[in-house]
Length: 593
Image (cartoon, rainbow, N blue to C red; front, side, top):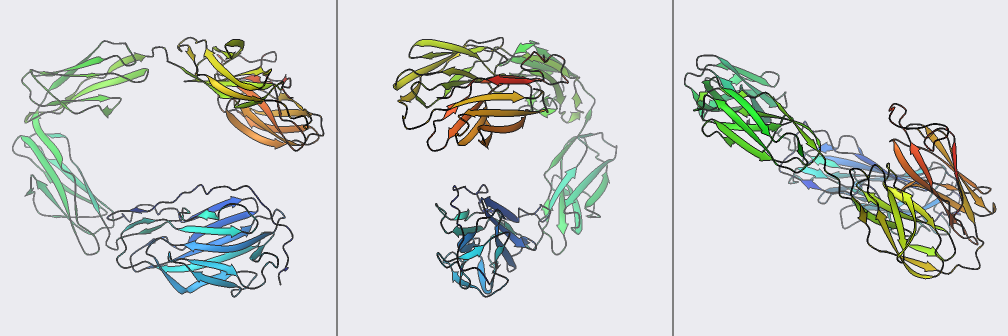
């Protein structure tokens, strides 16, 4: 028997489902494709909501599908009262009402069912419910399960369909937990298997020399025959498909461009299909040479690639390629040459080749690759003030600005109401500069950040950033926060961040940040909060500790700690015991108030 009272009911923060569902409907789906996700779990405080498909989630029209929704207590000591559990099927699925069952308190008959207008079902507690507020009582890893079976209509479109799961917890604020699109999918497939046929042929051939035409059918279990065709004319008799392949050896007698296809003539249970056409040229040998000018160039500057084909009277097209991939459409050869003009958006070394595609009477050829060196001009930067939005007069805060793209160095000068108040280095790992500052009076202050520029990066100035400065609240006890960083500032090595809050009776949490990235949050216990973090990339990072005070105390923030994180495998990175980037510890003062 259940306890008839609810010992405690938590009121957690509202959290959203991450898996937003959608329905994708098409003309058919291939049986060889992997099935879509058939289960999903949502967790919030003591609640764990899981929905899953029982069995295979790939079905055909007329089949049935069973969903199982489980509400579980996560075993952290606070009892939940579940007001209702709702299953939302894909639109059009038909609920088999006799299939619905709810398992609660080791019983199958302690729930009432309501059948919804969307075709789904909602379960509510009927017996052994919470006395005070009603609902299923869930505690210490206990579960409530709702199972429902639906029939897929015979005329259902083929495609992928999402489904929903919703749960309402008494005394929790906000909407139901879960989502009508919960990310638990069913794929409705055509019972007749769709096939695809691909064709492999040589790009060139010579008259009188046999070549192989190879057709591949997917799925490989499809049974039938392949009819090879040349421009719509059958090439020989159909060839049986064995293990998904059919091969025909054929000799072309006349030079010219041949458009060859492979038509799969399917047996029962499979759809027929036809490959994309492939071309074969029967031609004479050619030689293609390539020149690229200018070389090297800057990012964004035009270069001209000129291909020369011998003999000069060869007719056809040149396909230019960059790093092995086609660039643009083929270019016609005129008087033995073809040219292409292009620019490059990024600095690098690019390999360009020219492939002569040939024509009747000429075999294609490919030039030797030409490497083009593309160098960067100076990057234009953008500087933006990001913090603080608000401040308290007389209480230190951190002025923060970002510089993008992230530069390799440089400083940011902060200007408040037209007056320079200091400069801070830009972190090469996060592009953030942080300067401690104290506003002297309440009102609206205008903060501007000026990036000085550095090698490869242009200077830039932010727009004005308004900061609302208010007078302090006399009823709050002022606090200070100091940050201590312990450990080796190396890539892959854990660092310990220790924030000390005074007075040590202050309650609250500390948010540790590197630039704009929140590394984590820790509770203050006895005036101290700690966090361990490992940096994954070399560079300088500005780390701060922000104390978010509880009742009766004022917030405060530490001074910035600039950490030079080095890669021990890169000898060009400095680092040593006397260096902020070497092993040891870094301490900062408090900006608390």
